[in-house]
Length: 620
Image 1: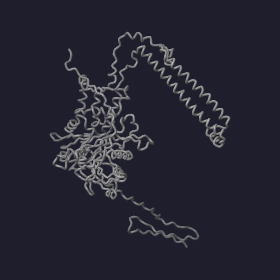
Image 2: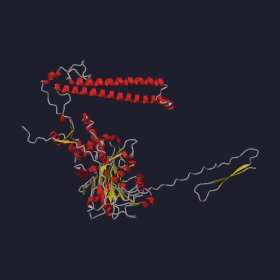
Image 3: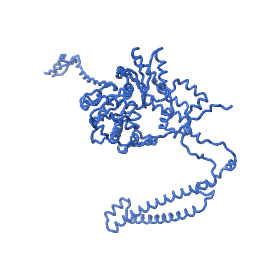
Image 4: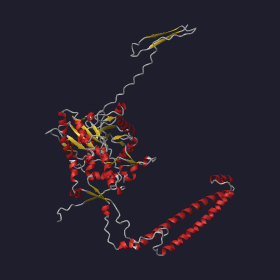
């Protein structure tokens, strides 16, 4: 009895999207008058987003969106460096790619400078020696002071910008999605997961509680590497086709977060569920089956092509050898002409360069080369005639100039197998990747890092640890606004999974609310743009660092605002001076005919905590 609900195979293919270079925009007039509009740069570890903070509708989205990588070979000039979308395909240059990030912290400021050059150039800035627009840039939560100092030094000293503002991407996204909330400042907790790291950021009364913020070193890049490892173990015959770029595409388009991980794995044990939910990814392949039946005409044509190819290779080698011999002969003849013209000094100098001792040796080399050139030309003419005569004749089965060895006859079973019906080999199915449980196993590492061997807590375990540091009333306020943002939070089912985990963590009948960012990957830029429009750059304005502030307070200085880190100035303790060595307490007696005595007088200094000693030596 046939089944009515026949499972339908879901066959997909890789997009293998190749980026096109970004255009160089013209500087809009609205961004210069009446004041210079700020440039908003979301400096992400996966992608960089840059645009203008201007009220016009045409500036509602970022102008530039590209991968935060640079391809620069060792010793290459700056002009030869490829940035972001200038690299059409990342895989051939994977070994050359460099990023300015170590996890989510900027440490390579040479690459950061190249990326800022790329941003300013493509936004249309043509001013020499300076950027006349304020810069708003995102940074990592609890960014080290040294990294902020280097970034401020780069912006103020290299680009001579008038104002700089720093903020956290997750807080900007939180700010953007809570603008309609009339009860600001807001209290909540942010779960942000990006490319290298995930963060738990408590916000109390509109400000980041940096002391209780935590980082989990598991995010999108670890999930992509885990998926690549799983599929390479599953399909060892397609190692070259399972690239990291394709795994990122699989992760973004085909993965999902399981609400109950173990229950979902049990569902995949069912064959019907597997056939219905498995995603078959079709790899590119050639339709011809290797080792299939080939007709006699095709074999003859292949042998003829191989013969032509060999003859072309031999002819090209003879021409190259003849050209080299002719060039060397011309050089030696030019040296011989120096002797005939009477230029003895130049002649002897040229002989030394050629590593020859006398004119007789030179003449001997000339004779040999003339003979070799004549023989090469003769062989070239003979080979051309032989090619024409050979190509005019049909190629027999046994012909082929080292293409087939007569000691190995053709397979006698080939004629017998021609009449036998062999099962059809499905070449397309052989080049398919069956992505089943991998769809949910890779996002699961965010909640169970032990799946990839990471010895640390998962995201919800860390959230429970953070909540335990607050009073019950504060916990109620925090969980009433749980906010999910970041590119790695875009998996289907992520919100439902967090809600289920919170239901298990919180007390019975307690209330909580989980919201997802409108655009988890872009809301950080939109939030930064909104903040810049509401807080214009000016000297002494909240959140903006002027050049005077930079010169007076140092590069690590941070002007705090609702979406920024907390500025904790580093206090350097002055080194305590070393205590001088105390003199011996016992008096030493000097013996001798002329020695009398040594008197030691110790007096404590009233203005110092250490003892000082005055030693007076008297000799008679």
